Image (cartoon, rainbow, N blue to C red; front, side, top):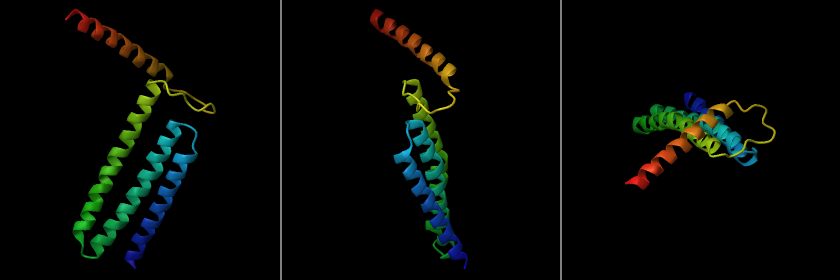
Length: 131
């Protein structure tokens, strides 16, 4: 009976992964796509791995369960950080938002970062020319 509960976890995780994949294909820009990948796929993959871990612990295959828990923790920690880094790099390098976006709350901060990078880049190039 408890095994069926973990099979439901796996099924729900597959549905979340499917929605995340559809979001990656259908959403209009890199920022919305990263949100679909981060939220849906992270949750879906973690649910699948938790279901596999539960089945492993119930079936006396604790090594498989432990590996699934470790993998779920790794996905949970790395996927949002990677999506944040990709979106931040895309925004600072000038990838435009979708035209239907309502708010651009990062615009002022991004301009400061671009200015700092330009200033640091010119200082570093001047130092390289003098040596």
